[in-house]
Length: 109
Image (cartoon, rainbow, N blue to C red; front, side, top):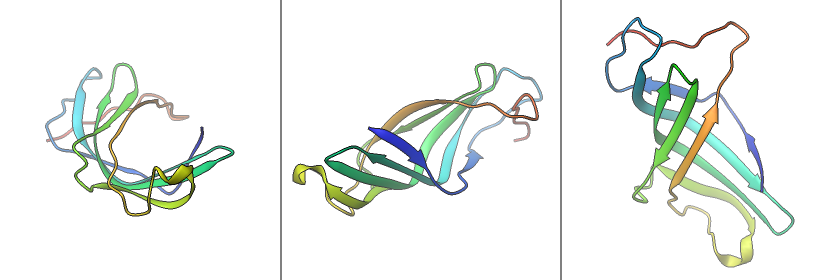
């Protein structure tokens, strides 16, 4: 399915980070919004998700499990009745990040 993003996601660190460039910083994403579409189905998933950022690999890992309701579906069209609006959903994915300003490092506590 084709994937598009919307809005401005915000990463919040839940743990410490050093001034180094190789931390894996645990946290969460607020304002996450993803839409998947194909010929028979369209789903938008939005909300807050557990995530971590690996400074060395520049990967943002989203790993929201347990159908907690932190992420829910909306704008459901089609999908053979398998997904409904307002349904809690799990999401696991890796995103490779790049920045025109160079390295992405998080510091502070």
